Length: 119
Image (cartoon, rainbow, N blue to C red; front, side):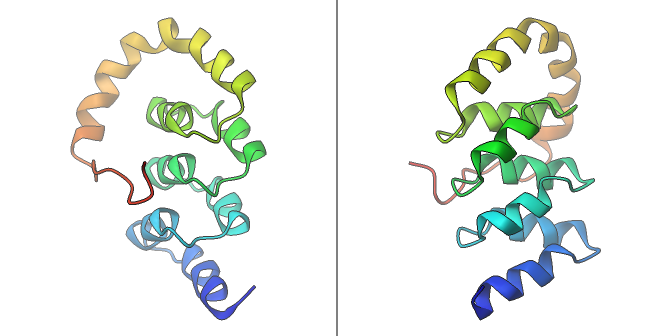
């Protein structure tokens, strides 16, 4: 790990949710730090990890089973998500439609901006 990666790793352990969200969002956050953040208690941290292009496939597979609909949506939108995971997520769509309406209201108030790495 270089100094920048060490700084991001230290910030990933910060008690402030917003700091951890910023680390998960940062384009240079390495996969090993994203792996650590994938288990974060904050839904938005996990969503940002699920959207990040450097998140390892096995972490995306784990996040595909997350209880948060927004996290699973973020996994589905990540171009690095393995196709077999996408197939499983596609099968969950019907089950989640009712729950998604309730969660959408909460998500709309969050940082709803496109990731700088989005293509």
